[in-house]
Length: 166
Image (cartoon, rainbow, N blue to C red; front, side, top):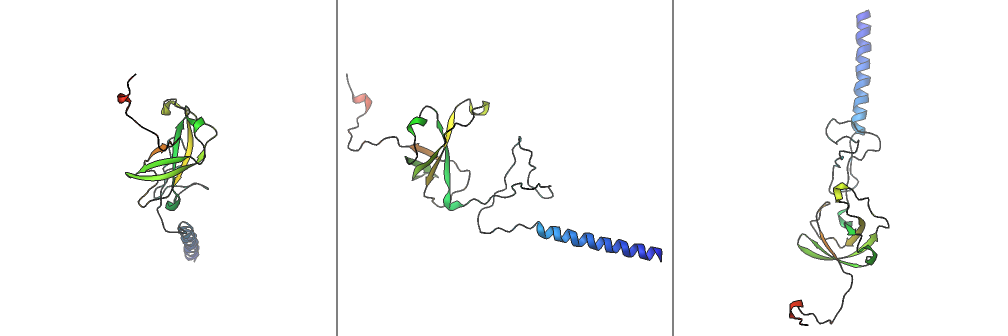
């Protein structure tokens, strides 16, 4: 009789553990609120967040997934300290992305430079944001070539420098 009661208690405990595990499994399911691209963020070596992989332990408030809005993409540009005084919000920027020219404009210029370090070659740059109309086929992390227009001179006569004689 004692063995039967012990087996029943063990079965009841197993059932409770199974119910709890099924409840936890349901809480582990992540559903996106919209369709789109999903990015798994990789933790850098200096961060203490574990890599996102099957069976990994995650912490509270840890970023598990990123879903960028591909309709509102922008370009982060580092502007050298030697020309930062000439750059301002609203300036025109010509963007070359996927070999396609795109018109853009500067929407933000950081007031403070990012810290220079050995990985940047001690070059001081100010982070700026260039906004543009998004063509199809863009993905986060793509490279772009940005040319900031400082001035335009319409109807100016342009000649090659080697055609000038003193």
